[in-house]
Length: 223
Image (cartoon, rainbow, N blue to C red; front, side):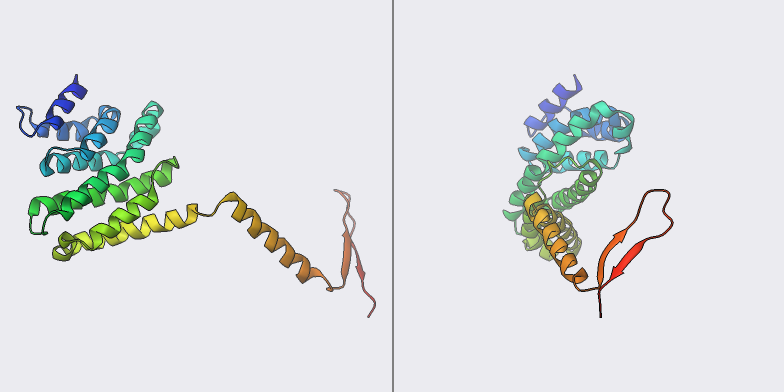
């Protein structure tokens, strides 16, 4: 029933439903809110107005601050994973919408601030859950776009938040780019270096027996 009401409110610019009802629901009923998270993030992607998108992003921000519920109720984890997977597209939609304005609109500034804040919280949530579904590279690109926007130039707090989000996501994206093959190559190179370092050290071998070891035998090369 609540999900249907949410869909009805988010689909139209003007309805009789008060969005304050949903905002308070996300603050006070986290278990219900997490179940609605996939719907809200979808509505944030295709909101009919800046106000609707801002409200959806603020609801998701409130939810992202209540991650303890996920530990208490593991059955909610799939909803959190879906939210993380869909969030980059929602942030991108907010950035695109903001780029169409000259940066003087307070409503747009508020929307961008909410988008960056929830983006930062989602990076933290991804660090906890390690789903592998959150696209750090895409979010870093969105943050870079916001950083140079008219909105960021007029609001220093937006520019700083965009820089933090870009840095966090870029770090994760560069770390993820190291494939298992590359890591194996690193181990192989380290092994080669180790052999080169030990060669000629004068140590031919060390004989160590099990728990009854009385000592070790070390053979030195003739000088």
